Image (cartoon, rainbow, N blue to C red; front, side, top):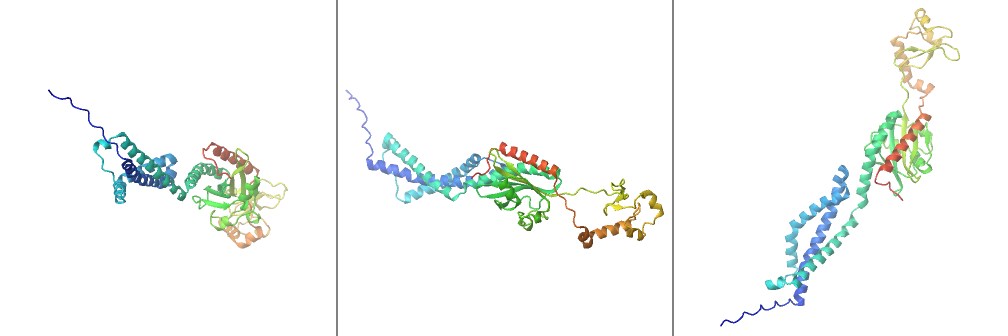
Length: 381
């Protein structure tokens, strides 16, 4: 008769030394994997965030996801190199039978080594954060967001206020500076300009929270002349209207400034005004010169046929006929361009009035609302 077959012999458990060898054999390569993975992820994600993220307004999470692609790709490319380096260091797998390799205790030792190894490597990779400015990208995104909003607001304010330039200065309490990129009408409107906190009329308004209306900038003691000297405006600042923008907490978060009120355009046609209030006579305004008086009680139309246009004696009497020849007009224009004319009559000062002050307060209100609607907050102390 045939005998019954016995049960297979039990698989011998690997020794403690073999299990430790299996643990370190799997842990060491994964320490390198984790370190390389986190290093590439941090630097690639930061580079993507600072370039593509700022340009297209991507979130930091999206930049990190794109950095993960580079990180996983590097893991595939350098995986065999890391494994060969571990073997050269003497980390080899113990000689186990196929049955021993599938034992629960063997698989637990292998998995534990991989998990602890990758955690250790990723933790070591966090050291790269010490060499990355994590706030620079966020500030760049904020500045870009501010610029997009403020340029639209300041462009409209520049046109409505009829001035040479308009700018919005952001108060950076963390760095104690004011910066601007939202300027319209300036030669360097695309350049970020920074000024120390409290410097110039803008700094004074940021400190005091009071509106400032200056008709002659260079005569004001707080005017910062480096703004003109450095070529930021591209012209000489004359009249300045500056107002603060308040946040929800009542603190000044920005400053709006309008520069150089435009003079009202004069007509190019020769016109005769009505009789002036003091009864001295009629006046005629031309594009070349100021109002020129006619003799009291003399009608301009009546004087024209009787008086030769180019008779110099009429200039000595302080009046001109109704019809002025082009030669006389050119002489008036030439005289106004001379230093003598400017020395006698000086430069006409054009400043901002009460209606402009109301306008800039309205602009500040819109800026405050725009800031409140933004998700990002202004830099705080």
